[in-house]
Image 1 (cartoon, rainbow, N blue to C red):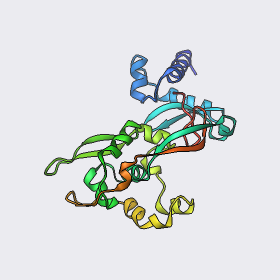
Image 2 (cartoon, rainbow, N blue to C red):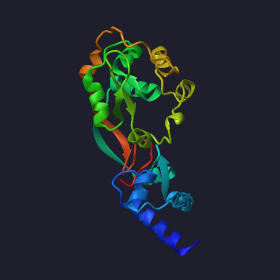
Image 3 (cartoon, helix red, strand yellow):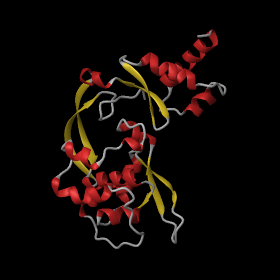
Image 4 (tube, rainbow, N blue to C red):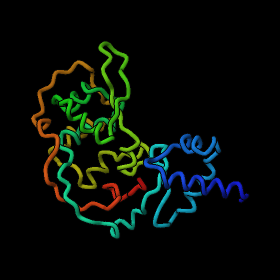
Length: 228
């Protein structure tokens, strides 16, 4: 490898290490004077393979994270006093599997009204964003997931989301919820906009309190940590 490439490798590595959030190829290139950084990123990813820190791409954004198999070395307990309610979790799943999706479509799938605060919580968490408006009468706002959602759950893209059978095999589904979840995950199952649904009492309590759980210092809940 030539000397200029060595310098570029070091510059890309330093840029990613110092970044406060994951960066796209374009952002890295702009920061380094429009340099072609793709070969350097590929080389760095190979160089870090098998080490305690990995260079990964999540949702077309690059960042460093600790190796998943070292999670037990960084584990600590902390009091997590706020977690997503069941209503918010259902809405997040529907947005992920059907994006872009409107609030009316979310309510039609869930069978109950969705409080505005539920979507606000997901947007404040950085997992859901406003993706524009659907070109139909009334032009309703539509929602989609964010790169932070992919990074948090260790997904390269939405194509890596598990299917219904995978979730059931992992014991992550309550049998009582199977019908609703199967409806929510079924590809292309987006109802019409005009749907009248009852209110969801769970939306009054967007967060459950004092859920004590083991988390990982500097890591995402899936055992992957970023350098942010």
